[in-house]
Picture 1 (cartoon, one colour):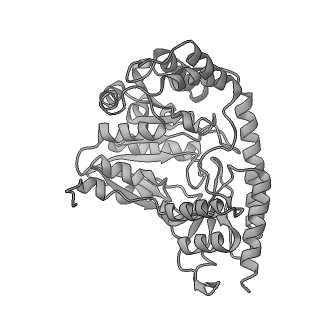
Picture 2 (picture 1 turned 180 degrees about the vertical axis):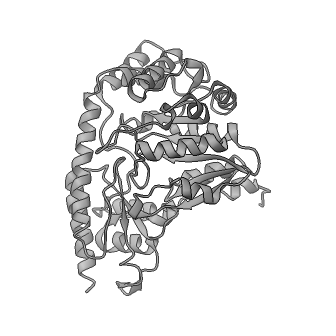
Picture 3 (picture 1 turned 90 degrees about the vertical axis):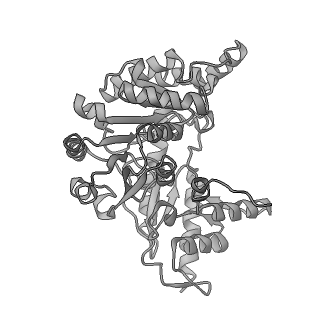
Length: 398
């Protein structure tokens, strides 16, 4: 049977990582000890105070529909958090609670994009940015960033791609997959540029709490002009180890939030009621578990960077945040491993999986084929064993 399916839907790219993931899972099913550096979620359990609040909510029967844009208690908590930690003042009318930060980004793009509008993103990018832009009817415009500049784009880069169709830019700081963090001076220059050209800024700050060497700064905190142009995206998944709870939020001008809320009311209605109440405790309660997770991530990062840079043919810079490392494989490409010429990041990922039982994410999925992404959201034991296997697999090719 043939179906006349949506052209837009058919044009959505599947993840290039699915092949690696499927192979790794099949190998595990066969009892093979596969170590994965692919995780996009913390390996820690959700903090106890948050879990206990979820249990309380269930037992007390607070499980019905809420307002489509979220409960007032959580909107108030988000406002308190943004004022205390980010120096940005919002009212509940500026806040929308969603089913994860990804839905917040989707709602944002659906609310601001008209057909043909352009949205600027840096390469390497988080895999869903281009697809979400195209789903909303927009056109992703790419800026190739440089490892030597910390994988960050600047005003000169933005000027080169600015057109009369430019609607927004997406900033992800700390970023996935690079861990890049924009400092205050860099953000101020981008803010001035956005205000000058009346360009919206989608500031994806989901990894905000995982900034290791410098303070995270929100671009919306500088002045009212850039605040009005900024949609701040955040959520509970990464910092609070709440990936499966699916709870994100956005803060923006009330006119933008109103459209986002209308869209959400017709797509998913309210986010999970249990997760909303638990997130109030997460944002306003004891933060010691969050600080301990951050400390563990930093130790893992430092070990991985030091070790990777000692492996022949590989190299990396130290990421400022998140829990990923982009590993440069330019010296590997073109070489013959196991009788196969390594011509792409996917080739190298397949080699590591088949030779060393190591799963990594090919950089082509993030728009840059000269890299692979390794996550340190796994135990230090796995990290040590996994990197040792990678070193041995490469050394054995002499």
